[in-house]
Image (cartoon, rainbow, N blue to C red; front, side, top):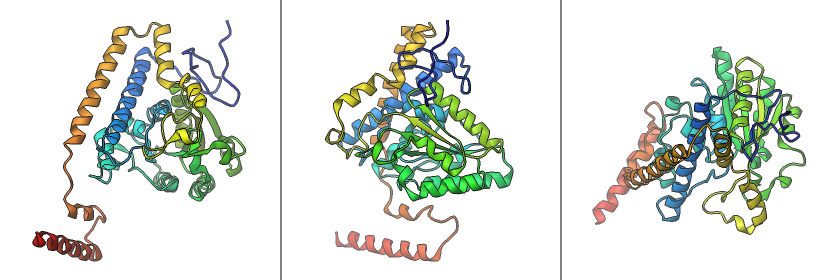
Length: 360
């Protein structure tokens, strides 16, 4: 019996119904334990995200950018990285942070306003979140050029959305990466909406095809298929490490929630579109695959759900217990060495605060 084939222009290894698909260029051999581990990642990452949304709605976070629906793109690409590779995120890569070992509490602390990104980028090889749209692409290319000159066996991956492809920084990063053959993977999570602007207002051609104009390959992958995202990203990173230069990966997915918690998507998209994408849920297709192939039983799924609940409760408790920083902490970690101007500004700020204390 011939295996089903993927849709045209889309690398897919697992259908929404949980059926395995063969691909001549991007196939992957996963053990039962590896599939179960990917399922666990997807469920726990979603639980972190849902807890963060709830915390924001209850006034405990200032803002949150949900990844709901994009878990497979982030977990698949995140698990493709080696310890030596460096990741450059936007502000939505909570799943990649999870894969790199960053405590989700640090992410919540950033949006609670009590830290500036509480993790060490070099400890996890995961840079701090970038709010400025597209600027991280330049950072990743520069870092990749450094890897190249050091002769290190590593690569960088940089995340951005479909809206960012209209930014000059992203296109400049494409040029530099191409000309210098930098070991970088550009990972675009095309979730169909740049806040309220649909994809057709961003590009007249599929985004992955833009890479050819800059002189490097582009590939579109089913962003709701964790198997395909893992296989495609693993291959792109391997090519980068071997000196074959950059690749643009377009993970074709969908943002199930709002752009951020300050956004109301019901004002610009129809419910039918959302319902259609619910049938492509990245978690349900892996669950179906595990069931159909008898790789997991109900006890396994119940265990993961219980673990997710415990994770959510623990994360909530630790978030609420986060202390407010001292006002002067804003001057810490700005420069690696003492800096005269910063010291002067710190002194002025300290004096200013002392004036309020005296008035009381």
